[in-house]
Length: 504
Image (cartoon, rainbow, N blue to C red; front, side):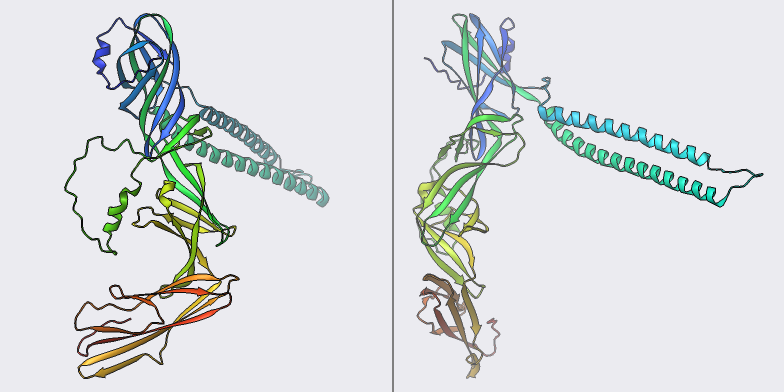
């Protein structure tokens, strides 16, 4: 068994010079697609009988968005590949799709309905004209009785009302049918744009030592496709692992539907430059913990390419829209804790902390969050983090009550010599109204001086962990059901009384 892979694409002039070479067209079918983050590799298969000698085999009706340098041709038969050329085909007139035919039939049916209603409208108007033309009763010599006049008036009223209602109904139907035609015309215009796009073809020049049936496999990369990650995250309770459904949102606009194909999703990006990179000096230094450079330092954590083979066949239409595909499911051991910053928001947020998450080959993407069987919102997963622990917010918990208050009775402002001394006292009350014990991280802060003439002193903190560089106060609490805890912190700011400092 011999496998031939084309490495280079030859010029079209090579084929044109071989005027006596027979050309045969082969119909191919998409059998497999590997979708990258940007782009996709399509595999097509077909069979054709070739005579002895040199033959041009034309794979036709292909996407116009093929990257010509990516084309590979494989065959199990004993043939020699002499050249491959990719070119656009502006003259190919593809058959109308089922969707196009259905729209044309619907539009024709609506036009016939409009014609029928217009004819009926004409009949009703003629009938109305006939009645109005014969509305005179009696004569100048002989009048009519009141009873006859009443009967005639009733007749005209009833008949004209009936005709006007029928005319009104006809006009209503005509307006509705025209509105439907406008919608169909809009869909037809969209489909005609796709139809007017050229297709392309691959011309393969082969040499065969004998007449034989040849199985061909063509692989090429298209640019108008890709996928992105999306997740469903479900947490039943804080005592059980997280269920993570890993999904891919696949799109493609190749011009051809992928019908019942085998799919593979890859984290690779073959459309990136193929130029070999060069090494530069690797300088090593400390990175500040609050620096945005952290992301750059850790962006290569998931740089290796990973592929997900999808077990079932899928159909992806060429509409450019996202189509959801389930990749896999994970059960993730997690540590749960609540976290709150009452200065910014008085609600407590449930956080799930996942360790060793790199093994799951996660990508940046949106997450649908479910907790205790209820949809609680959406979030974004950011895997470009400098940490081995992935923190995911599972939303707010209203059963944890937090109040933050500035104690005015203890807040003071004094003048001591040339200094103004301002003292602030804050109190944070937390109550656990849940039925289980919880871990809760509370964060707050005091200001940090950027001027040596401003002195800041933390005088009381209720045993908070204090970071002098950032001014952050952190309490790691454990609260039993129905338990209430009170935290208090106090700080003093001293600065020249002649200066103005914004403290709140």
